[in-house]
Every structure is written in C-alpha cells, then in structure tokens.
Image 1 (cartoon, rainbow, N blue to C red):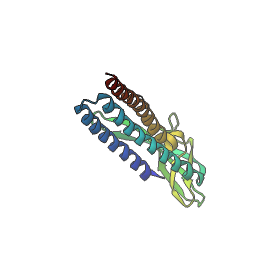
Image 2: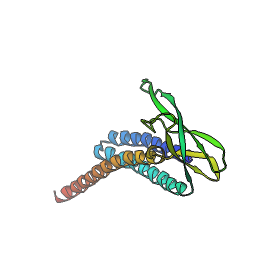
Image 3: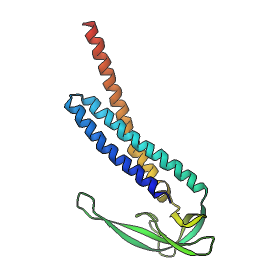
Length: 183
C-alpha cells in the first residue's frame, strides 16, 4: 500500500549509517573517541526513529480507510536472496486470493515468513483500499507493523547508546574545563 514511504525510510536509514560511519571516522582521527561513538549513534538512531514514526503514522491513517476481508491461502512462493555475505537464504511468501467489494477476485503476495503454519485453503485476513482494491496487504502483524517495529528497535538501541556516550563526553569536556581553570 505505502511501499514507497517504506523504501524512503530504509534509504534514509542506509545513508545515516554511511554518514554515521564517516562522522565517527572523522572524530576518531581527531582523537575524540567518545564523540566519535556518541554523535554517529545519535544520527543513526534518530533517523531510524523518525522513519518508524513517519511510517507508523502513515500506516495508522491508511488502515483507517481500508476494508477487511477473509482471503484464502493459495500457495507459498519460495523467495531467494543473496546478501553481500554470499550465503543464499530462502523464505516462503504466502500468495493469498481475496474477493473485493466489487466482486473481482484478486491475489497478493505477503512478506516472506508471514502466515507460518498455514496450509493451502486456510483463511487469511486481508485489508484493502476501497478506492483501489488492488492495493491490499495480508492483515497480520508482520505485514502491517513489522517495518515500524524493526525501525523502532534499530533506532532505540543506537539512540540510547548515543545519549549515554554523548552525555559522558559532555561531562568529561566540562570536567576538563573546570579542572584546567582550577589549576
């Protein structure tokens, strides 16, 4: 339904990772170790949390205008991916058929790994946009909120580390200034 927004959030996160690494390397070269850890972590965590908030807000509002129907699991499609490590992984993505209010039969493919333990013919909840019934998604947690959870988790941990380390670096800086003044 809103895959373009998800792609934008993931692209921003990817660029924040690269920018964070570059910023960290620059600060390390200046012998600012704590700042080199804290500021990049804040950048990466903040970008992920903003992405989670934007995608979550959009999902919440886009779900308000959808209609829920029961679909039927037709089959699973094997999806293969080979990340940079070179190891090929396989996931099973469900293909679900549903009938929209206009009476037309449509099908959609869910995310790999969703609808586990179900067999062909089992019912699966589907939500679709009444203005465009072809825009649909499997109505489970993974397909609806999984990306929001992932971005939130990938944002909270770096943000917590960044806040802690940046605060520590700030305290050390002010302690150094006070120490130098007193000497």
